[in-house]
Image (cartoon, rainbow, N blue to C red; front, top):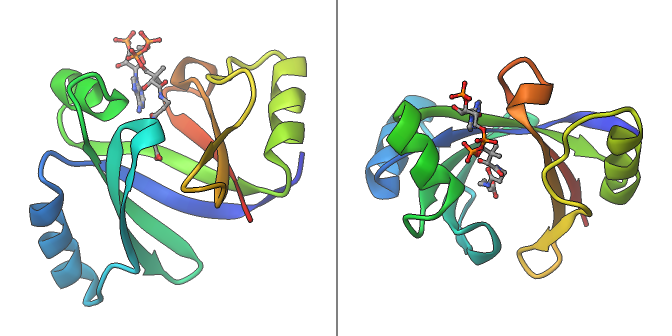
Length: 135
Ligand code: CMX
């Protein structure tokens, strides 16, 4: 697998509108994208910070991974996303070398714009890692 860089750093928030206002002030910029990702039961806002993005994540339903995370650990850093050239190949590679990968094969989200998968935090020293391939 080839890691091309850090794609984004994601923060779980309770109220996306409030968090957008906070980050607009801190970064002195507007979000480049606000969208719902129903496949993952989240609504996201992306801010570009140089080559990397900051992603704010709000749960769309109580059974979303984000709702569960906030209930257990409160708001905060949720995951780091590594951009890869080929999410299928990365998933295969990670499974082969014994990592606990969340989805059997990468999930296509945002109308096929991205293919994503995750490495369980128990496999990565307490940090949830996403792998993302962008079209
Ligand atoms: N970062 C670090 N640790 C985390 C974590 C996170 N984001 N989420 C859960 N954990 C920890 C829990 O606190 C718990 O630790 P303890 O056992 O020490 O208490 C442990 O991991 C629980 O693991 P689990 O019982 O297997 O699973 P959970 O039900 O808590 O779910 C996870 C965790 C990672 C499997 C689940 O959140 C998941 O499948 N995530 C991938 C999908 C996702 O996060 N989607 C939302 C973002 C989508 C997007 O960006 O588009």
